[in-house]
Length: 400
Image 1 (cartoon, rainbow, N blue to C red):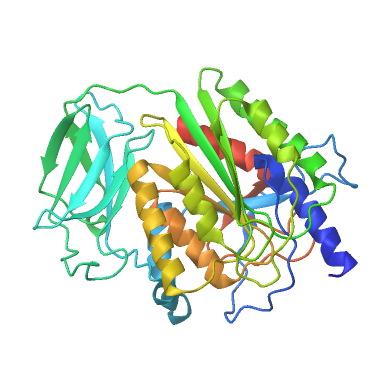
Image 2 (cartoon, rainbow, N blue to C red):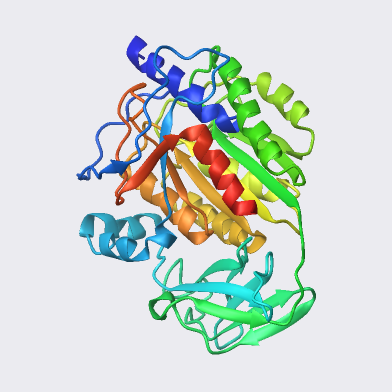
């Protein structure tokens, strides 16, 4: 790999480790098959000026785009044949959306209630948990118009389960008729638990970037803890590579012991890879199923940092579908962070993940002036922020 590309990855890693991650260096994957008009970015923040030091946090810039909050824009781009075919490519069909705001009779948001969307035969179509503002997103026919067992994917009613009470709502409607504002008699369940898991592509070279990782990690975690001193914060990390590498996955489960996580991460190195796709589904699966996600929590977040897609096979696609379905049922928001090297197919898959779990899409940008090109996402206007500031902001929004 050229010295220039290694230099690019070195600085990219400096910022993305703001969530105690590290990214990978890969061979150039080639140009995308799709063309894209570059959107305008508002609020651009420049680089820090001069080369970053190991005592400096926050250089790389990033943007965020939540398709769920820009639904008409999403529907518009899905009418474009180039982007519409992404649904068939990945077997994700977020066409039948049911958006809920859940409150009690005192107009207080109900957090962490389980919502179950069912068809007329009482078959569960989708499950989700309300977040800190009482919002939840449910889907009918997300993986096709006919279910895996031939069942109808047409939604008939919604169940809300909260504090061991079950409420049934039959007068439901899709997002085209507006969000459903539902009321229950339940009292508030006050939680102060925040679970954050980082799933990281660990292929490529690592070198001395781990020192930058420690600085960025401390910056983000210290700010989150200072901003919310009463929160019960647990952190975990899962690293993945690919079949045939030194290891496939390496896991550090959710824990309150941040120092232990730092020490474990400090002993990591990167390597392997070679071809473009990596074992994304293995890392996400381990993080989702092996972590003891809190049964009651204000928020559960899974940040997925990657610069390459999963292998495009029916088996992998089905596993990813099951992971996303289970993440939604557990109330785990999937928040992808895409680095340089991704193609348009990967971008849309990550946006499918975020849409399906009430998450948001984060992407590294060129505005810091550091490194090489990152593809512009197919979105509208967005604000460019320092990546560490963006992550602190997002975490704060999910727990305030």
